[in-house]
Image 1 (tube, rainbow, N blue to C red):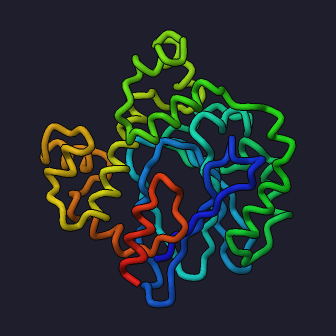
Image 2: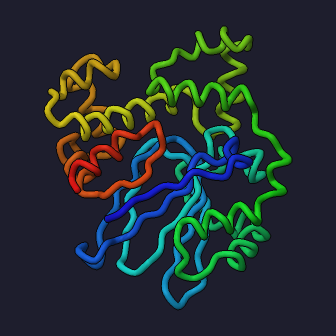
Length: 271
């Protein structure tokens, strides 16, 4: 399987983190179950089956990994919104989307129609990104909650280790109010979001630092010990770290975002 990402235009960078695409390669089986690493954000996906109109969905935040069936010849593109930006940008309520995948037409029929008209059948990720940005320019007029976005960015950059209490003090806002705003704008409490980002970053190191002991990687990411990390991975992915890393290493990653650049290095080392 091949996975790639694309950065948005500068004008969209406050709302869109990355555009993404994945699909089976010629050497892959005609169908497989893909494990999606959760990151606590809201997304929008397009599935395009040859000869059929594209299908668009809103993807809510989830505290556990999703598994989807992927088929040869089908195009899978999508948008990953910045944590805290989807509510204002799309005009949706994140809490209504938690752990759900909802047809875009059910919530935003106008956007679904515009995307269906703008997206070319068989178009690549760059074409999808261009189409999405072209039909979404007007949505930039609704800025996201800056405090929530700042907190989310701190949690991402720290790998989920930033203390919410300390962040509230730095931002000049009470912890309870900050938590309420974060939940409203993202659909997840800050603690759940932090947990996902820490597990995600630990998984990156498990892939990149193949020669390091799992116990050392556990310590680097603030886990009490190796069993602690293993329990967290099992809770999120319902599988052991060994099996998860084995699966992720089979994927050819391209142009991953800067916070996961070690995925890119790992992919390059296999070519």
